[in-house]
Length: 259
Ligand code: 8Y7
Image 1 (cartoon, rainbow, N blue to C red):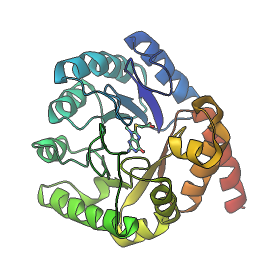
Image 2 (tube, rainbow, N blue to C red):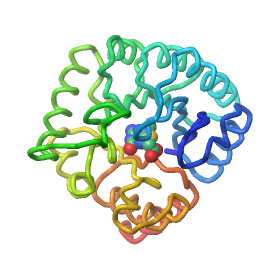
Image 3 (cartoon, rainbow, N blue to C red):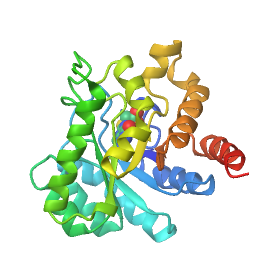
């Protein structure tokens, strides 16, 4: 899954793709590089980021989704927790929902069920503005697992198909370094206990800074190592900024696994 931020404040690309045509160009480049899904987001969820209004978010993402769906058959995922944005994005050609809030906003689960598309339900403790202040768990893996089971049950009750549910432990979303490492170690267990496919996002994240002291443009080697490990542990999708590099790393390792 290739990341396209259509925001002026996303930490990893400095907002250079905040113009729709640049975002479309970048997305098509990621397709050439091997992306199987494009994740289009119009509101930064990095720790401390400001919220944007529905109108602002629609203005950012809808033109990009419309243009892209005319130019590529690669599935487009809408990265939002707002039901109005989900609905408009689906109407504009998106065919997957990526919700960092796990379909917990009022109306989100109904929109996802009606849209009848795959949904990624991510775990987050707290809200983006404050989530890194003091993340606390008795057992992070057990609590994320319990959250997944509750959300899957609610999603199924709302009419979402089990096969359409993808789960994500939300690396960096209300978690300390230790919590993130425990979750990354438990991908296979989380997949087995829920019966759902897993998505993992570690690309350029600050846990790499905490581990190695790397600024954002020095995080590619660790991002690749963690992405490969997630796949070897059974993750189905990795959400990444550096598609070509991740594609090569995973394909090379898979060749050995499949030999
Ligand atoms: C994730 C994500 C972000 C993630 C899923 C960043 C939107 C922060 N991270 N969605 N979004 N999983 N499913 O660093 O880990 O890219 S935004």
